[in-house]
Length: 78
Image 1: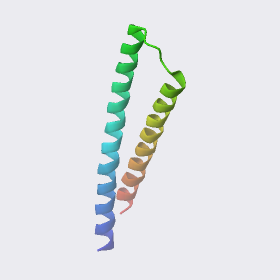
Image 2: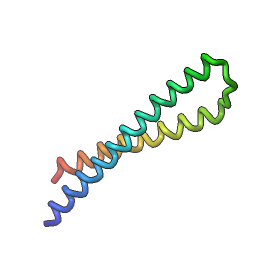
Image 3: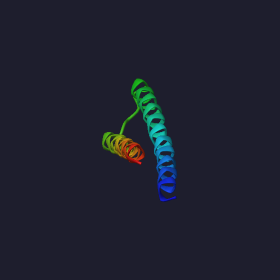
C-alpha cells in the first residue's frame, strides 16, 4: 500500500513540475520576443530588471527539471 502511495505522489509531482517547466519555457520565449521587439523600437530598457526577471525564470526552470529527475529516479527504485 505504501509503495502505491509513493508511486502516486511521484507521478503527481512529476506532472506538476512538468507543467511548471513548460510554463517557464513559454514565459522565457515570450520574454525574449518582447525584449527583441522593444530593442527594435528603441525603447528605454531597464537592464537590471530584465536580468533579474530572466534569472528568476531560469532558476525556477532549473529547479523544476531537477525535481523531475529526482521523482523519476524514485519511481525507478520502487
